[in-house]
Length: 172
Image (cartoon, rainbow, N blue to C red; front, side):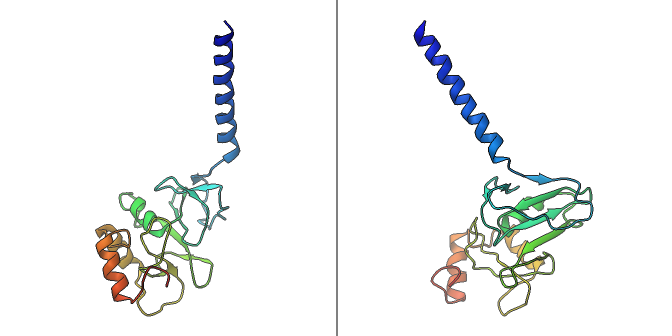
């Protein structure tokens, strides 16, 4: 009898701990009613990437996608945002914001310029920049390369890019 009681108490304790943890994290995956299509401030550790499900701990490579119905999704890697968006019916009409590495502000993702060799959370390599510099690519090229798998996550492409740009590893 006492073994059964101890087992029940142990199971209840474990269940209580997991319920408490899930309630305390309070992760935001999608934001609704963003009809004005404005940037939603991402609080590191409180938002979850809509593509891979990882917690967004740093906004250096963060993106946001806003649909016409006001739903906003969050990403910690621009490549993951493109991956998630590629099969959505609203992909061509979505409002996209990206955090820039040079000006450290949110800008229209379709007007940003992208590096190919940054060390990003999912290793795709695309860092967003507000100001155009040599070797940066436009949004459409970034989408094309991402959809082809021509990213830093591909070992053959990574080797070629690092050789082309004279780097030992990304972010040099």
